[in-house]
Image 1 (tube, rainbow, N blue to C red):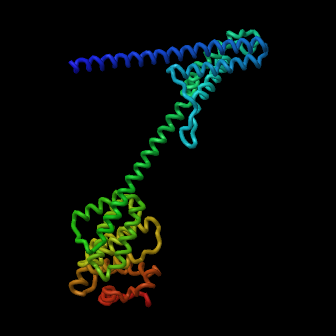
Image 2 (image 1 turned 45 degrees about the horizontal axis):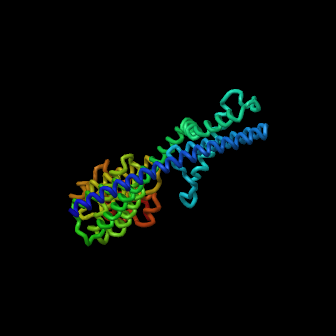
Image 3 (image 1 turned 90 degrees about the vertical axis):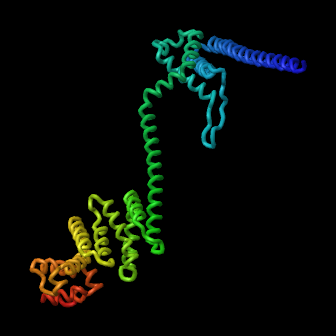
Length: 373
């Protein structure tokens, strides 16, 4: 029994609450429309007073302004809501109903100027006509301004949106590229640590990371490899050999063949590793010379100096029997040596004619270089 009574009580209470809410909603709607109608009556009365008291153009325009503001305000209350001005952020203020009034005034004057004869015959207009023009123009002012903006600024807005989307894409690409560069840098540091064993999978991963890195990161990788090669080519040839995959990756990242030093340092590393790879080194140095000459770069005589050594070490007559080299080979080697000694960077560091195996090859072939070279 108690359970039935309680259920009946709750159902009755819910019905009463729902009825109260509905009555409150109807009451609010009634109040809204009552205030709206009262505003029209009061505004019309004030307009009549202004027009009847002052029969001048300025006061007609004042009435038109007030009517437009009222029309704009009425337009904003179509959803039974009126937005008061408020601050959105530190530098942005939402004007709310003030903006609606301004749009209404603008709409009223636009409609007034579009209607034929109004400006010339302003004195002949009645207050009813002015009020009607102002309220209608003000009510439609927001829509009218939106249509004008949409007509003349649509392309600009679309272009701006496209630029924003493009900028977002560029920012995302920069972020992704930064992550790839960080990965390449970390792999390079790990690979150049000779306390960590070398493995083929890690080499391929490093070469892939270098090829996907940014140009700036590839420049950084080149200088790190160059510095390591120069510091270890005599003292730690095993560690020096780790620069070879880096130079190879840099070459693969340069399909237009714009950087001769990648090939040059690859040639140096192949020549100085244990055991040396004379033929590969010679080909790499030849490619470096080709790119250097095509780009009209001066210097880098060490390319020819080291290529001459590679040719000597792969010349069978000299290597196997210490006999005279064929004439064509002798001429090629001598051209490289003569080109090398033209570079002050070479002659200030070494005496070419006394470097093994150049010294012995010159002796076997009864050749010589200028003194002090």
